[in-house]
Length: 348
Image 1 (tube, rainbow, N blue to C red):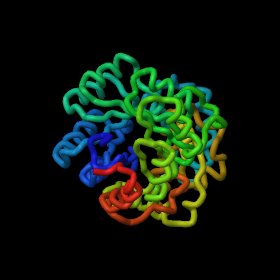
Image 2 (tube, one colour):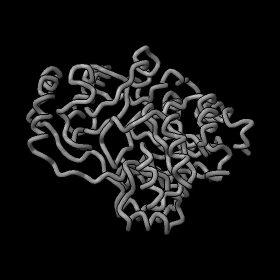
Image 3 (cartoon, rainbow, N blue to C red):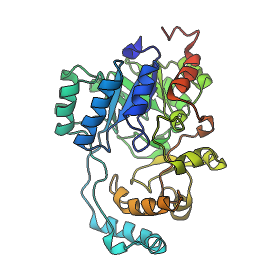
Image 4 (cartoon, helix red, strand yellow):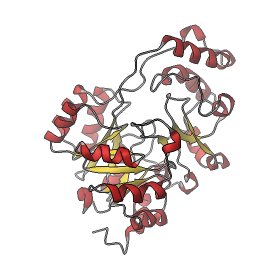
């Protein structure tokens, strides 16, 4: 069985809305639970890995970003500051305290050193792969490597560099797009168009992701040649998820019918439920600086608005099939999704 799990099902790592609790629950239910690590400090990562070690003896995956941190561009940051100034004023925030910084840290030596201690069986990356010397360290600890491709070219690039599994991330997927070779969104395609093309082009197992939120979607993905599926949005209402009350409310409202790609929250296209700031500044805007430099500037607006019960400035990440979200345990959701594997010889 792929991943040495009961089901060929990967829980998508979802930074900001989950901790080790969801990872543990999914792994114990027969899937491959995942821990998002891009927003964790070394101390936080250690705490989460210890929790996983204590909570499950089943396989699990840890996920990191593999972007190259950009230099802070003062002119771009000033443009971003000017765009957000009216909102700072409206919410009573001091624009002179406008923060800047990286917001997210890519996989580095410190991360590798921690993983060498815990030896997770699977390590996944978003936005390509880390530097060759870091990837070599991951392989040396016995981990198998997973990464996302949004085009056939990216899949071939990943395979050539030793990736053991490739995620075919369709345009329907919630959260950040994983593209890294070309930032032209016109090259992005839906899951069921992308998946068979990648399957045909590579020799490693392909994991389908994007818009798969129920057992029928699982069956369809497997029929198109996937070796496994990755699901994220369907878990967002699970009690094991740390999704905020504001985010949960949006997921259960009519607003969840309308998701869009936006760069307003990080500087890079990511799919979420359309809210006020996306409508007013434009979902894909010229104002934010390069990823991940946009995050610090909008963070105070998010915090203040959320303290008032508003998600107007929050990244309400969700895929296009958010209507399939349900209030159920992670184990229940996992077992319901797994019904899509029955009759395919993909469980056991």
